[in-house]
Amino acid sequence: MCLWCNIKPLPGANRLIKHLRSNGVPTALASNSPRSDIFAKISHQGWKESFSAIVGGDEVEKGKPSPDIFLEAAKRMNATPSNCLVIEDSLPGVAAGKAAGMHVIAVPSVPKKTVEFSSADEVIDSLLELRPEKWGLPPFNDWIEGTLPIEPWFIGGPVIKGFGRGSKVLGIPTANLPAENFADVVSEHTSGVYFGWAGLSTRGIYKMVMSIGWNPYFDNTEKTVEPWLLHNFGEDFYGEELRLAIVGYIRPEANFPSLESLIERIHEDGKIAEKALDLPIYARYKDSPYLRNPLQQGSASDGSQAEQNSK
Image (tube, rainbow, N blue to C red):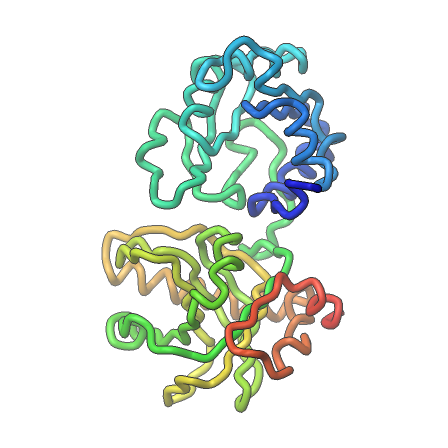
């Protein structure tokens, strides 16, 4: 039985590993897990050949938060610890990296816990936020006009009433979906601002920009999906079936000092999405059958079949 076959990499992990490998940057994997478990976890991802060294917790005297595991990784790469950059998702890992005399970026695995990782040199919510050039590494070259193409994913369901703040507070009507119907899919994707295409069962296909997350300004207690269809409908359409093809990423979720600055940024996101969706790399998904075919309530997909059909 394969215990690890269904686990998925964090958003941006494949992109980062491929980027470092293609640019000849030596990379190590250092984990408290036994070496055999590490290989079992990464074998189906095709990552083994991407690392110059792999160090398991059973190969050193002490695991994290001791620095042993990172010092051993640096030794195997023939690298000076002070020239190494650690990317960690746990507090023991951050402590181990700092104790090894390395630079550390924290990507907390638990939402809304950023403040607990203050000992790291940088804290980001997602690997999609990573800017390698800040650390002397080759920059990503896949951003297009302020947007990042992503593996498309698809969700749909009936439009429901949300918090009532979209139209009333922000002046920006959002078409909320019942997130509990596809909680597993939403949990796999990092919080932030995305964009793509929206299909309404009786109206047509429209450009849209959407937020996923806890909306720090309003301090949501649960992760929500709030699409804004970039069209003036002039009326509500609660209960109507809405299908979304999410094809690109704009920015991480952020807090704002004022309501005015939040509204200004949302409109800027809308302009970015409006322009980007005319680019061929994104425009082709407007023809996805997923946006037009009837869906069962709350259906969701990672987009593999829908992407095939849109090409």
